[in-house]
Amino acid sequence: MKRIIYPPLDEHARLRQKMTSGERAVLTLFDRCLAPDWEIYIQPHINGLRPDFVLLNPGVGIAVFEVKDWNLGAMRYFTKADAWGNPALWAEKDGEKFCIQKDNPITKVDLYKQEIYDLYCPRIGNNTSYGKHDGWAAITAGVIFPFADAAHVRRLLEPFLSIQEDEDYARYQPISGRGEIAASDIRRVFPESGRKQSKLMTKALADDLRGWLVEPDFSATQREPLTLDRNQRALADTRTESGYRRIKGPAGSGKSLVLAARAAKLMNEGKSVLVATFNITLWHYLRDLMVRGLDDPGRIHNVRLTHFHLWCKHVCNEVGWNKRYEALIKRANMSGDVQDLLNKHLPALAEQAVIQPEATKYDAILVDEGQDYRPHWWNTLRKACKPGGEMLLIADATQDVYGTATAWTDDVMQGAGFSGGRWARLKVSYRLPPLALDMARTFAQLFLPNETLDLPEQEQGSLDLYPCTLRWVQCVPHEASKVCVDEILALMKLTGKNGLANADITLLTDETKFGAEVTESLENQYRIRTVNTFGPDKIEQRRQKMGFYMGDARIKATTLHSFKGWEARLLVVYIAQATDPKALALLYAGLTRLKRSTNGSWLTVVCAAQELEAFGRTWSSFND
Image 1 (cartoon, one colour):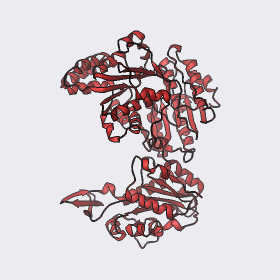
Image 2: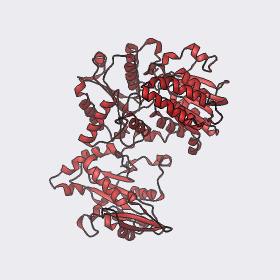
Image 3: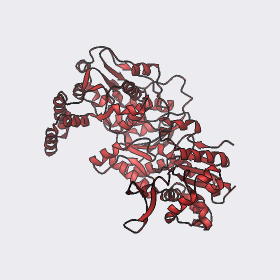
Image 4: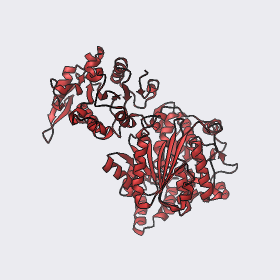
């Protein structure tokens, strides 16, 4: 029987968070000495928690371990009571004392154990008639110090132990050190490792937990180098004679991939790059793509990610026009004329600021989501490009969710630096599974304006390679929140296999208030955490967007606007209304977020818009 190690051993050299030497020694011990039916999960995602190791045996139990490479002789470690009289872990070095309680391994593993018991394997507490304490005993919470003596570690951490060394349940809270690691003494490191079976553990309980242990698809992808087809590679590796290039392509055709690869190539050459998007949430995605294309990850500092109005603010600050900027914002807030501020007055101020000597200039400026930019925004950005530099504009008019794409006429293009030639085109979708691609094309042909259509084409030979499940749930508005929660819970039953993790589940909605309702229900009723962008006001939402990224260990939830450019294998898309072209373009953008995989993808649309019910009935799975 081959042991499950996740992530697999052959991918460890490319882990974004490298294992310490102590963690590598512990992994070697576990792999060599544990029975093969013990599964080993390294730095797993558990809904926001990241223990060093989780061990799982469907017939025996669960173990969570925290590993510390501390040299206890390097400085003085001690305990000290906090303001409430509770012990806290402290250290002293060079006469300076500081609290390190946040790194206390005992409190960490105790938290991991409690949350596994309460939230991520909840049925373990009622699996037998033996009572809670026995269910609790199915989970070992251990601490390992590979470079310190176990007795020394125990003396230091004893005030934080809930069980003393001579008590019956001490084997479920083991502490070990360098002696046990050097001797490969697995029974001292993990006393329960020798158990053959347990009445407290079942395969179903293991399935509950696996969805939280498997690495999210996005994190695994981050270890892969960028892969481009011949057309994409030619666009990423070259520049036009003028330095100006415009690229069109439908959803999933690799537009952002080309932008990121081009940015990485320029950074590898030591050049400065400004990447401007419309959505703040897209920054993490683009940055992660760029890192995969860099010769040296440190070169990522050569790029600046922004959106147009943030760049306007920064360029005003660079030239000392803070007061002028603030006065402009104040006047707009007082008059309520925010749209004129964003579309006219602020760009005009930035256009004056950028030509000042102090304003930062860039070797290349790359604009993603160009269909959402207004032409005069682009022309203002052009002034920040160094002479002989590059300007790249990427767009998909089919995802025109703000109604701005039609402004990019041929005459406008002539005045935007594109003196001749055509758009470079990307046509083939490498994101969408074939079935989802066909359904998205049908939707666009039925509901979107013909003049803006740019539909993705199927990759040859892909038809049978990427299975997907499409589900449409028609509902009334007052039931929609519960339906979305139920559909998310249904997707959670699929995780833990086929490379799917709970952290891959993403909810997209066209209403911020509705999204907040769903995430609050997940948290309050099911204690399922999310990373979301549904804050109570614009300022908090902006802050949340800055922290939104697919590598987060929690379930994702955001607006359809904010997820443009992203992708996921497990999607729930909610649409409340479909009465105007922008709403329909937004739903099309949502339908095209599904990421293909040979292991399958799942898309559920929850729809409260009656206008779309007939279309929903064409899906293979329809519920009302």
